[in-house]
Image (tube, rainbow, N blue to C red; front, side):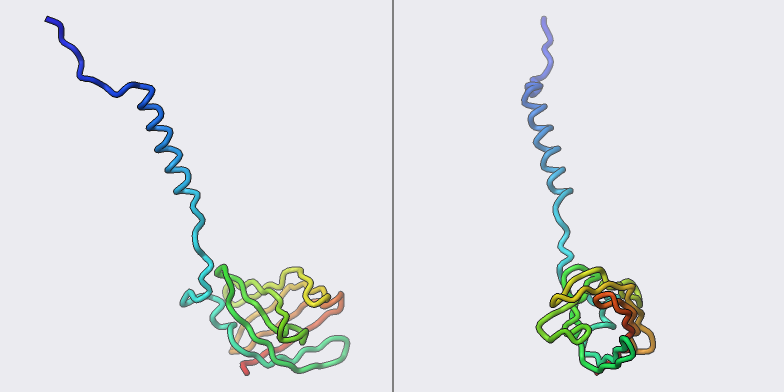
Length: 143
């Protein structure tokens, strides 16, 4: 009497099923994580948001104006409206890490800005940056 082995899935079908499972696993691992919610509680950037009265000094001239800071997108990004008194409709981007902000190189309203940035301490933001190549310092307090 001949003893036969139980039927096994055709090896070609098994390979195809295996490849499909690997592809599905690859795409699920590559799914983009949604970090775009700007309202993550306890974020480092919470202390920076709101309206601030800034006293900016550049080339011996001091100017006082209000900026408005809002969380945007990724966990470290802030939009700063009226930064360096450029106008309420225009914004600069700051990147937050702990109590520090970095002002990346950017052009806003035809003005070139670059950090280093500043720090938050005792409910005050102290900044240092260049605006069209001129050194600028600013002290901002809640408004």
